[in-house]
Amino acid sequence: MGASCLMFLQWDILSNGGVVQEMAHIANGRDTGNCVSLLRVNSANSSQSNMLILQESCTDPTASFVIYAPVDIVAMNVVLNGGDPDYVALLPSGFAILPDGTAETATGGSLLTVAFQILVDSVPTAKLSLGSVATVNNLIACTAERIKASLSCETA
Image 1 (tube, rainbow, N blue to C red):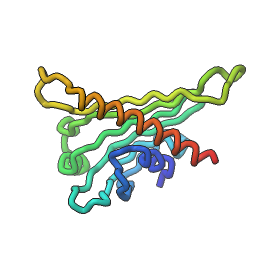
Image 2: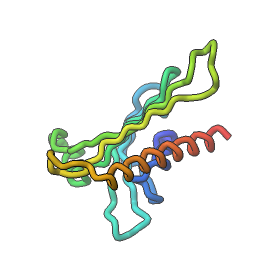
Image 3: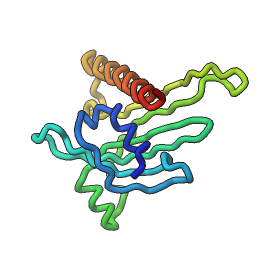
């Protein structure tokens, strides 16, 4: 099992303290952290249904990234049994970590870019409310802090 693939899920609000199980792991290169995984999140809250997350993670000397999307269990089972993958709705989110500076002038820091795709309203002409903007702003700030904390634990 790719521990580095699972490590990143601890920063995401989708895991929400649940148990993460890797259902499928497809290596993508020599580094074990470069993979595509299908993850099941068994919620700590038994009233919530289990969810699947399709995730790709990749790292090399120039950057590291994680891209993920929650996927419908029924649609994913259809694909896993040979069905058409075009019917799986994806709203991918993720982040990239790039070194801050060149090798000659490395400051030891990193640049973090976080991106989310969230369906706020199914009506195309709907306007974002201030509450929605505040929620997304809080989500980004919280995720950035969780990523930083996760990386601090790994290097400590």
